[in-house]
Image (tube, rainbow, N blue to C red; front, side, top):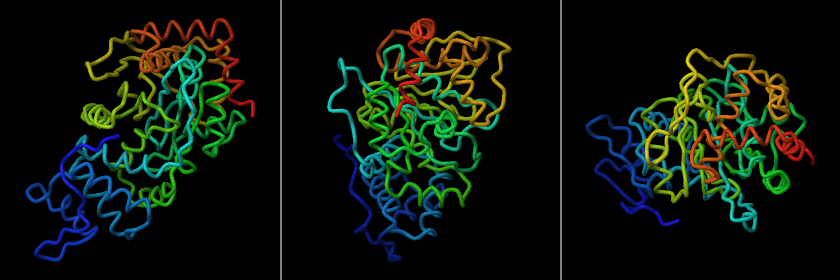
Length: 353
C-alpha cells in the first residue's frame, strides 16, 4: 500500500531538551492537551515497529501506550500502528481467491467475552458455508477482561488453539474459514501483549490488532465498544485500502451483533438491521459450552437468541464479502446453509486436520 502523506519518523529529530529516538515519540504524544500532537502515519508505524522489535524498554513502551490512551488515536495513527503489525506479520496467503471471492477478516476485542457465549467462530462458519471466505483472528488470553476467545472455542472443539500460519492457511483452503492466532502470526506480539497486560489499560494496539489483513484479507468486520471508535476504525481501514469494512458495536466489543439493538455501519453509514426488543444474549462463556453451542448452531439445533444472533452476524460477514446487499439478505443465505447441511459440513471441514 502507499503510505498516507504527512511527514517522516521521529528517530532523527532533536529538540531543545535532547528528546531523540523513542523519547521524542513519547514527548510528541504525552505532553498534555496543549503540547501533545497526533503522530503521522509513518511516525506511528515507526514507533510500533520499535515496540514489536523490542527496540524500546518496557518503561518506554508503557509510557507510550498510556499517553496514546489518554490522547486518543486518529485514523492515521491507527492506520500507521496497523501497518507496522502488518509489516511484521508472517505472510502466508492463498495464491488467488477461488472465484474472485475476497477474504473477510473478523475480530472483536482480543480480551474476549465474559458475560455470554462467544459466537464469532459460529458466525464465521455459517458465513463460509453460505459462500464467504472468513478469517477469525485473536490472541491468547489477555486483560483487562481475560475472557473467552475464538481460539479457546476452537480448541474446545478439538482444533488447534494456537495454529501456525501454515495451519491457518490450510483451514481456509479446505473449509473457507480459518482462525489466525496473532501470537503465532506476528513476531513480537506475545512480548508486547505481556507489557499491555501489566499496564491493564487499553491502547492503540487493542484497536489496531483487529485491523490486520491476515491471510490476504481485503474486507473487514471489526467489533468495538464505544461509538467514537466507529469513524476511527472505518477511517483507518480506508487509509489502508480496504475493499469493504463494517464496524460492529457489539457486546463487550465483540464482532457479534447485540441481540436487542444490533448496531453496525460501513462507510455509507449505519446498516439496516432488524431490532428484537427485550432479547438478551446471556449464558456461560466457558469455551466448552461455547463449543457445544457452535455445533448446535451449525447443525440447526439452536433456535433461540444465540442461533438468531449467529445468523444475523453471519449476515454481516456475507454483506462485507459482497455476497448480498443487506444484512437480512445475508442472514437468509446463512439460514439456508444451515438448513441444507452446508454449515455442519463446513464446521467438520474446519476441524478435519
